[in-house]
Length: 197
Image (cartoon, rainbow, N blue to C red; front, top):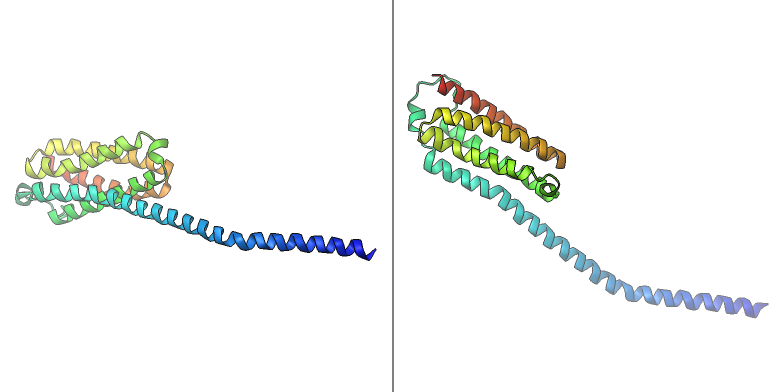
């Protein structure tokens, strides 16, 4: 009786030893696989940071270029304005902040694949960027206040559409559009007051 029991123990010991040997060889391949996974994660993180930088910098730089070339606003400065009208530096600062917030919101939507699931979000985002770049040249440089007012209303509509589409993909992206909506509503009031001065 003792011999079969010993043989059974010996077999269990051999299988345990062989499985231990296989696990001792696996840590090397496991660490290699872990390093490969870590390298892939690092590469994805670098790509995400690069895409975030592009999403923030491109609209911001375009806004800065428009402000530099068209934002002097000699006509705006010479107008007799109510006390609550913002100074030009505040208007430019708000435009730059709005472009950064919208860039971040668009990146959050893009990172979650939202431009594929919500294909209408991208045209609305491009429309709002274009409209935001057009206000300074229209109102401050050319003095086309009526056209600027229509542009403000269209910009507000594009922002509302962006917020709705972005919120479906990422609620945080939708919330980032809110300050831009507030700024645009205030700019509509300013532009309305300029039209009917």
